[in-house]
Image: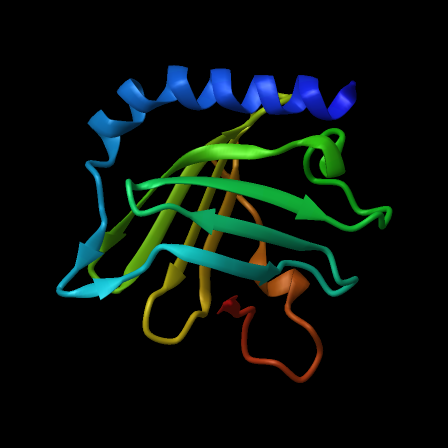
Amino acid sequence: MKNILITIAVVVLMGCGESQESVLFPAAKTVNGIEYSGTYILDVFKNGRTITLELKPDGSFAGKPEDDSDLTLIDNWEENIIIGSWKVEGELLVCQGITERSSEKIGIKFNINTGKLNSYSCDGEEMPINDVIPDGEDGIYIKKN
């Protein structure tokens, strides 16, 4: 029953959000002949928390936080699917969305050439990336599957 409700909510939210998001981010199937849609994995924190981003060819995306650790930047982290849109700005791939359950605005920017996370924001507040970079690493990197 819970899965059915989540599926219905995602379909409704995506249907409602397309008109608004298309104004912000026009459809971005390819940029300079490069296809950026696909699945990306972002290891956000030292404790292994990850976000799986599914970038669709129409410029929309869905993000699913995965992990059951104690660190919570978003209420009900594991149940908060992020729905939004993406675009390429210069060397950055920019994802902006809203969490399904708590309606928080999430922003994720990473370098399209290196995969290095540039910024992560929640409700307009930049999260301190340097505080969560694993020891011995020069940054946090997103990986495309």
